[in-house]
Length: 404
Image (cartoon, rainbow, N blue to C red; front, side, top):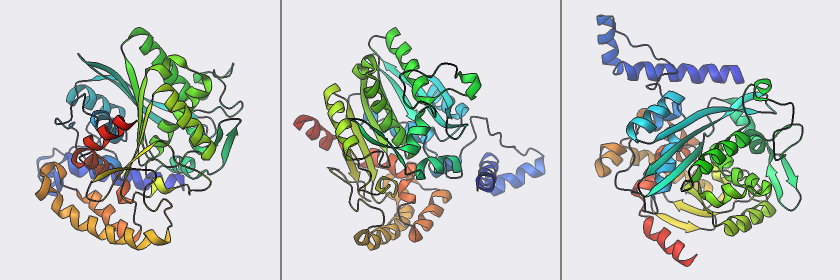
């Protein structure tokens, strides 16, 4: 399915960008008459991915400043959204709109697929009162079958005294096919021989240099969907390798729409080490998003603090999201009723909250699909961005921090 899926996705993206860059149908007609038709360039900063079209907002929320408990979640979810687009887009956004330091956008090698299929963007948010490096893993691209292969690989690797870890996610993060998670990349296996570096090792070594050169700098890790799973596993391998410098300087992990990544024993291992090193782990779930509800509870388990938003963007901190398994008998009817509400809500958002919350036709199309398969549109970046901006979570988080 790889070639037809990629062809279909590429065609849809080109058409969407073609219309957008030419000002819609009317603008395209004008440009044709004037012989000034704009042809999309996949590598340009103006080119949007399919996911990029579901939410085109670029600006950070000016109401959420550093020091607010929602600052890192709000910054993280915007980075997660941007990561679905190309390197030029990310650089232009981070340096131009956000006025931060762009540290790079890389494609990383999957030793099992033998292709560079993991993407990560890094940037630095430095001001007079803070110096934070952000590591953001890109999530599943809807027309990329290699990403789906990583998602649906439900086998696991079992580590003594750690637990069972999802095989597909481990491979995408940079586990070596011949030796697993050795502390260093095996001798004789260079980047040039592979075609690209392995994500975990390259990011770890890059962070070491940045943190050693900047004693006040700290870092956070984030990701949406598949990217959330990789963000959740990254500190696990740091714990495994006892990377003390990085563990001392890691402030938190923020995941959005993250699937389960390990079993009960792995969850206990993570909880113990996160607590030991004082690292906050927040797992954000919007309403009926199907991805946090897979793989099924039983074989795999969630860990960390779950911040759950209902369809009205009202937040709460819970042990587990409602209907924790997607194919839940009790949740089936409720999810479909909510899908109808979300379709109706899409027409009302801009009237209630302003033009920044207007939903485009791409997302509306996903809302319609959600009537048949509820939980798919709820996984979109739009709802997660809305949650961080509209959900009055600062009091909930402050209460949580106080009691922790």
